[in-house]
Structure formats: structure tokens, C-alpha cells
Image (tube, rainbow, N blue to C red):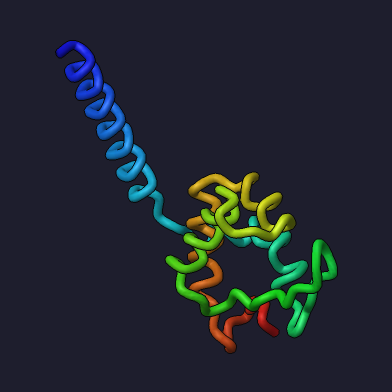
Length: 121
């Protein structure tokens, strides 16, 4: 009976922590203006039309301007966790906070072909 109570206590504690983590990340709101100083590293690859990397393999680099913020956040979080596999992006994503990711996603989601600072040009 004690093992059962102990398991229930552990499950309850983990559930509470999971709820807190979900709430904490839900409170992060992207700020496109704040990202202007954070995207310099991104523009080096993603701001060059038709750019392909050669490491660790030949890979066509997608343009980010105009993508959905949610898509960009999910992609960066997946690179950060290692769920998406591209060494360069993983190395960059692990250095980003949740706020950085939200800001960068907001910045690129706000881009249009006519945007003054559009990295797609």
C-alpha cells in the first residue's frame, strides 16, 4: 500500500511540474523589435536566396521571412531538444532562451516581401 501512495505522490508532483512548465512557456510573448539584435546570426545563412550549406551535408537553407511564428518556435525548440537533426542549428538553438526563440519567431513572422529589413531580399 505504501508503494502505491508513493507512486501517486510522485505522479502528482510530476503533473504539477509539467503544468508549471506549460504555463511558464505559455507566458512568453515574442517581440519582433527585441529580436532585431538577435537575428544577425540567422541572416548569415537564411538571408541569402538559394543558399546551401556544405556541412555536415549539402542542405538547402530555407528562407524564414513570412513563416508562421508558431512554426518557427516549434522548429527552434525541436532543434534545441535534438528532435530535429542539423548540427549547426542545434548548436545555435541550445544557446537561445525561450524568450529569444519567441522574439526571433515574431521577427520573421512579421516579414513580408516589402518589409524594409526583410532578410529575403
